[in-house]
Length: 306
Length: 306
Image (cartoon, rainbow over all chains, first blue to last red):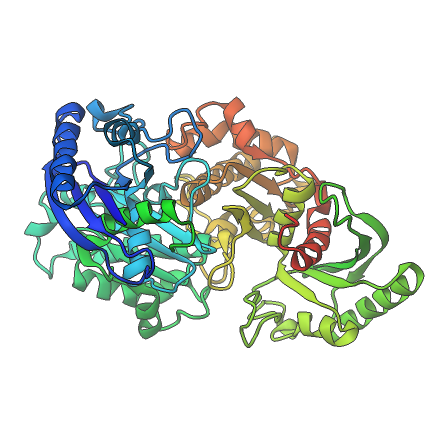
């Protein structure tokens, strides 16, 4: 099956035409064509995306379905009047944009529409670190913090979608930072996102050396946030990715701090070695989202695909 | 179908023999006999429970299956070597008790075993405030704080079960209380359970008048905890019960504080009226757990029951 996959982000839209083996879901999709489009205003951006799929489809065969993992907040609830749209995002021009409708209108094919993090979670479930795992969280820590979850064998939805990056944390005693989240101040994202690091220390994380105290504090907050989400959802596996979360040193230190943050409330996580089995890097690196978007298209075609 | 239902708590075991209408799951189970057994040592307690079901079964017909909603931590994972057992509970004598195995051995019938809060959630889903709702949380706030969830049309499990009462909260600026949780200090339970109220104010909640500042602080923490769990799981409905959580004044004030705690991150909860649709009292009052245990037995017999 040929699918169109879109990882729609606030910085860029990654688009891929891919072939998914519906007879063998364990096979990684074959990428036929791929393009990255900077996120400008909705009209021109989507126009370039449309032309990519037209042109790639002409060369390789048209997509039979589309899967879109989209930055949020979005409405992913099938049947809702605003299904397929971006909601009150800080990226002003995009508020109300009917992303899924644009693809339906342009190509007349089925469109699966979910959060970027749920798409990434699905990618990890199908072809990455969570193969065979029935219950896990995928969390990205970068410009923002967002999480997707796969529970009881399905992607978690509910009323719209989780906003895992905005749970409350408890500020470290020696941290006087007022937080970077305009809505919640010192929530998880407000304390531990890339912009929080930059605002607290006056420099981007990429400019801070590995010995800078920023990283010890960051690991402290990651351990606390990961622990709270584990206590809320009881995942078998926790995948930590993103520009900040994907730093190997930080993953290692977070694993060391995680057992204390859990305080014995995960009987399978009492040592760093055990924490290293629970908390892992994405198996697909930075490709979870785009591959997962291909998975969304395949899954919408066949609910047994995952 | 005649079922044995057990709400196994740290203070008492509520046991009921009930008739469930498998042809019409919407019908409230008919209670044939019921008994409350104080929780003593495991052996004598379970012995009284066994005799209750023998005697009630002789009068009304024997239970064809058992459903147990049990205090935790427990192992509810079918196929696990410790399935059906109580794990590292503060109630020392009960650690390792094979509750489900006791019923299997005594009656030779199928046994469904889950957390007390998942049982209560199922009760609310079948016959209470969550009828027809595909995604909700049931939280009890009393001697402890615990939550069960129904997501994507199923009870949420994962690696063992959630421990929603132990997520981190952010302490109020004017609250110097060190917390009552021996494992996490100022987690949700450590700040807002019944014992936390008693330890902070030197009096039981039942002895504090409605104007006591304890309640404003309690509502603050409930709003914060409810908000974090809503952001982690995106439930359509949030049921708040328990000896503390079930106080009508407290529910009202928590609803008033909830929109600010969510900070705009639930577009359906911006006013007290909207918060009152999200956050509700149990439809079954204090009967969610025992009725839900009957539901567990019926559900194990027929996965389509819920």
